Image (cartoon, rainbow, N blue to C red; front, side, top):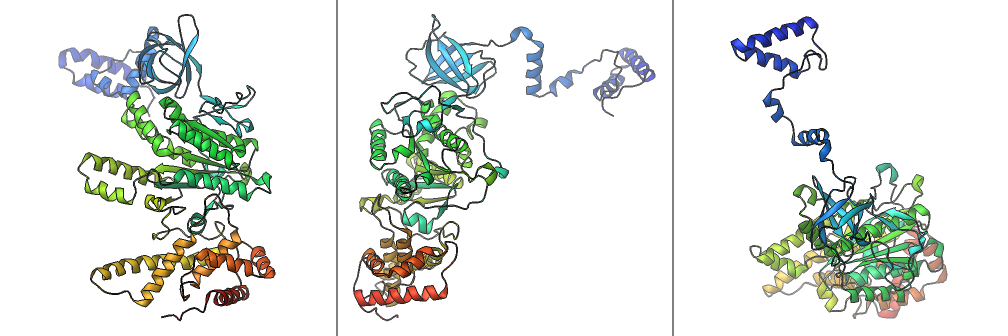
Length: 594
């Protein structure tokens, strides 16, 4: 009944009650006001408003009413620079501005002396982060709105180029053509559930420990975590180099890459550019660089610009699979914290300001209706190592411990928004073990088709069981040795098999191994042919020898076997018989089992 009106007789009764209130108090007045609150008043009578009703309105409603009633207090279209601190300025006016709008700062002669991006909107002011050098800016300069979106150049013209987050060339070559298409940098939308498809195409990184224990598919998000100096950048570059080697003979299937460098020294950026060029990755890649000397806003925009460029390739049909490497998000998080302090962002807006979850959600395998393309993400981030975690927990009450706990919180938050991850060990890097991934830690992921070959999956199930069993035995043996007990022969065999697994996953940087060779090595390890040899041998010496001695007919059967089907019993017996005979002939008769 809300919105209806009293009949005229009821309204007349109400007016009579109002006249009597002057002598009898306010009881009837309260009754009429209560009726008027629900809309039962006469339309022709001016309705009194109780003071208590004013306090029931929310702050947003009061501000909206004030903005509507005060026409003379309307904000100006342009603005004036009121303050400037650490490259972040406060501007009055800018009535039509929105988040991520671009503005120009004008001098007295009307020349553009600075550019900025709107990062936060207040009641009558806008907080703008200056893109370039803010030394030439002065308070009182006029600020004009240019675009409601931050637009950057995209398209195939960026392949093989090194640019900043705004698309300016940084490789000493000519500027990008003015005809290049432009796209909003910060307005990327997350694909809906209907736009996403099934993960069906395996993403073979060429790194054995990842392909065997953490198999991936195009459209997934993968994180390389570890302390500073543990080799994350080299491992990320190696993954890109492996793709170039794999699709060297089929360039039409070659994925396209975007390498985002954030918060690193200029010399380090130059080193990465040179390494990409030496590995022949740069012609298929775009580097978006924002070193630590550039303004905070440039470092903040770098990951979003890289993701936007990769998405533009998918929409334009430049490639079917795009891969974005973020190097690294821990530096980007520090930039975000500095911007939050400079902007004085309210607590309610701080959680989503980094945009990391948004970036990861934009990576997906699209459905066939969307072209069947995919966007994959490889995230690099500095996280505490094993030795750092212990010291951080020990000094929990100290400042160093608090910082360490913050790093652990960041690590857990990053792990929660990716599909899988590996932890790099700095001690293995010092021992020149590559890749420096502790594959003997329990809890590794073993997935079947379509992430990896069915035959490899069967072998990795046995190897994973060896890893878990060896971890338990290693703890028991270490404890027993502390009491002076000797190691049992069966326990020593398990520990030897565990050490052989570590040797199997060691490989040369930027060198590719065939899938069949890796499968053969996993088959040898899964059946423990090497653990019972009379003398110690290097794993890859045995694998290389057996692979070279294998008959061509058997190789063809293995290579031509359907990827998603397990080996038949007949093929399994044939491979087992050949491998056992060849190892016994060349490396000695194996010792009996205990």
